[in-house]
Image: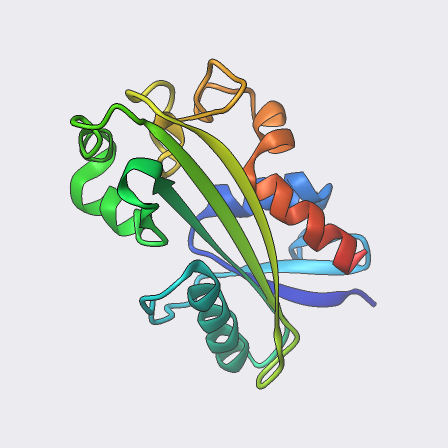
Length: 192
């Protein structure tokens, strides 16, 4: 019998990307990754202010308590070098409030358009258990939106060494170089 882990996200595109990167296969019950069955749940968890590590740990502990079992949570931040890594873990709220063009416009007076994306996965075995963190980082540039604009800020982030935004890339390429891939590579080593 497979061990069940609940991946807490309301974003179906993120779940698909995670399963694809981990090499999982979809089934009627969820996604099978090694000896694990990964199910998806959209759980409303209070978002705290703090570092990406603090935010992720809080989300994992809260989700494990609510779901009474093993959970996987993810938090991503996008930090502009010129702004001392803002908007950071609050990027989701920036996108909702000012949109992609608003994010690009935040840098209009700065020559430095470099940015760093950090993805942190938190795994918690259950209520009251320690949260294990797995983090991946990708450097790049903030550019005018190019490509599909349905997946967060992918259309304005061009990873270092590439001339395409995440949104313009073939999914297989993106999933082999992204911040999420780097974090999941560490998680895979832990789980499998």
